[in-house]
Image (cartoon, rainbow, N blue to C red; front, side, top):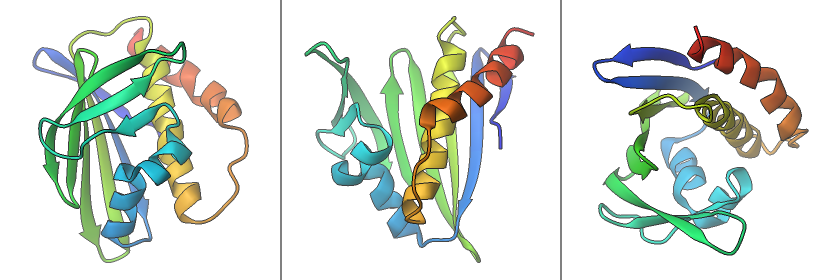
Length: 156
């Protein structure tokens, strides 16, 4: 399911929705425990899971970009800076398990935006596979499918 992308005031917002048939604590742990985080976003590490805490993004050349955690409400909200943007995960319980909403609030749309949104899309798919103990096929192949669709939405 593709993210909905819309203009909200002075920001572009990409909003993803996923339902997982697992308890909210399981999904929360998948998102915020470094041992699980590495499975779906290998470059990210949480230094301290608290408001004002830090996330480290491994640039891949031995350097790290530091991001700030702006809100944490265990096990429902995790929000952090993403360069000039903001990423927010909201979890809620429903009769079938957990509903996840991921929003990226973007100050500006750049040539890299569609790549990021396609990346978040694939990450959410991988989280679902990990929770279900299913094999992860080819992330790049899935990214190649959704990237052109996001690029088209953003260049309209």
